[in-house]
Length: 326
Image (cartoon, rainbow, N blue to C red):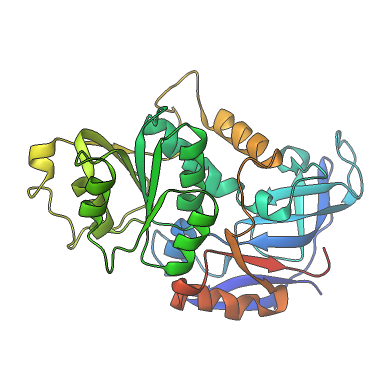
């Protein structure tokens, strides 16, 4: 029987067998070749928060090929390479409308960065990053990595990134950012002010949901600049002092979430348009995802790797899973 990765209770991932179902009209069966979990909201649920229910499937995106096709499916054939949302399991059944068709040049790593790209694009747009702006990205998980690259695509003159994990900073540097700051050993505010002639950055985008990082984002900001709060934060129990700087520098705090329609630019922009552009750009290779999805483990190792991702975030950026030869 095929297997899937599930959490049977908080922080207890296992590979377990499941019974496959018959496909219905309008559906296809996908044999999964690759996949990836996400950190953010998925890990919050994994800890048992946000009304989590167990057993819970673990994982976010899968890439594979269609191996069975029901009646009434148009636009897809047996053998087509596709991507879809879904937890890590050997097969998925999806309706045609849930599938993303992959071009021959598109890599599986680009495909599994589709979900983080949504929130990166929403952050860039809601922060109104413009040609010539100086931008800082706080937190270098997959969302932060893609956000940094999109800031460059948007025409930012300076892109700085902030994260205490060395390998994540190096991935961002390899992708073309200008400055990578270690907040555990450097004064973030001072580095950002020095890099901008004492002014601070025009836009700071905080993706980590860490209040100390939000505090640093505000401190490194130019007068009346914009802070985009993109991370899904929990209750603040420390690390943020709005009276120290924000009361005087009057930052604009913008909360960004891609799939909260109506969009700020409604009706011109909505989540459908965000998804379309993200897939289009990933398909065209505009976002470098090769080093973002690291490490890559076999599906047999997925439960142990998921625990490792949780306990040792310093060892990974975005975990990738291979189900075989692909």
